[in-house]
Image (cartoon, rainbow, N blue to C red):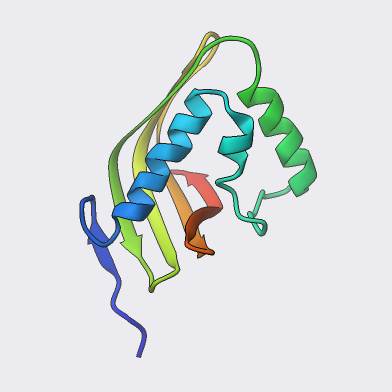
Length: 123
């Protein structure tokens, strides 16, 4: 029988994946592309573009001149066993020429003790 899923916002058993969401947003806000991109699993699903094209697009956007602010609020985590989780939250993104607030979902997998993003979507 599969372990029961649990819902938490932190602290608690899901605090690690909740902290990973915060650290991911912080790396993005600080425009540290290496730290930001390290949150994505090798098998990250990019949608219609290749992973190489996705990385090039993200690098250009994250490292463009000017400040970026990424805030995450109301983080909820649903764990699915010891190595899978889904987080949902409200994300507010601001840059010099774009601003958006959306509901976001990240699907995570734990690899070598670290939570990594397998898929992301805006709702």
